[in-house]
Amino acid sequence: MCKQTFKIHKRFKKNQKDIELYFPYCHYKLYKWKIQELVTVHKCGNKKCKCRKKNLKNLNPAERMMQKMIPTHFKLNYQYREYHFTQDQLKHSEPKAPKNTRVTLSRIHSSDNLLGLILALHISFAMSARKTALFLRLVFAVHISGQTVLNYAEAAAHYCHKFNLKNKGPIDDISAGDETYIKVKGKHHYVFFFISTEKKTITAYHVADNRRTLPAVVAMLEAKRTAEGKQKLTFITDGNPSYQAGLHFIYNELEPDNKNKPNHIKVIGLENLDEDSTEYRSFKQIIERLNRTFKQHYRPFAGFNTLDGAITLATLFVTHYNFLRPHMALKYKVPVHLHELDECNTIQEKWLKILSLAA
Image (cartoon, helix red, strand yellow):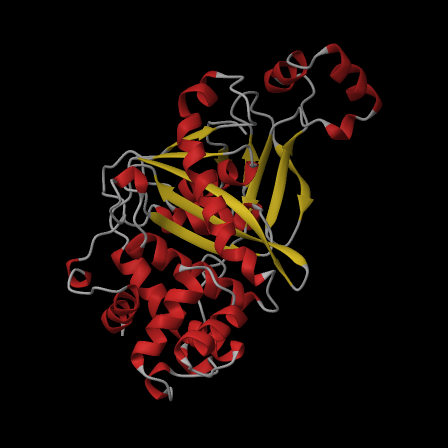
């Protein structure tokens, strides 16, 4: 995608539907190539455009031969994507509200200590719901079902989500982002994570059923929400084009007056075949390590029956990771230190303290 902003010629048009788009290099009028619900793709039809000639020149002999046989497999002409996202679609995924959950924490029949112990075993120690119930029955002679464990986790996720967003702190200058897959009803869904590379704080955790531009935009908007006014950000991701297209949408449609645009570095593949991959590989490995840590907590679930279950796990995992889990790179300190938790001696007490602070 061209780094320059396309040219808009209003020509005294009465509404935005009549706006004409022009490619800034050859000043050729863009035509609507694809029209979909969330995006309209405009394309330059000039076959003598310098951009097209440059892309064609970069093809190797095998690719040139293939381009003549299957021209649709190669994007040589300039394209501009006009997204039609609404404010409701740009909201970060969040757990169910208390009125929609199966249980309400203020009305549970179990003690507070048992609630904290359930969250400690189920989330912090990555036990499945059935194994958590079995552990409580065999060790503490507490008889609850696996479904009760899931109900308590679902009810706690609402408060933990508010707590995560409020207390995550400022973002680092360099942040790494990636998406990891999970399964909901047997189909692939994705959790988009962004992590500060110095503080090791998870700054965004959006759950979606695809890995296209919309969820990438939502994750990046939440990640940069706590950035300072003049802070220069750098986002490091893989080669997924959704991140580059998402940044283009954010700073050309949502925030056109923001001149402090972040850098976007792509680290592609497993080998350092370019300068960016060589310099920023270590930052990409941080987000890959986070994905592996999340998978350790996800594996006992073996998938979810509902999207709400996936959002519950992602939310509670971030609470555990940011506020309760010691990090080796931080000399075994937690990414976000809260003085209110210093007086708590056990992890179940810390879970209960977080819930009381979030309520």
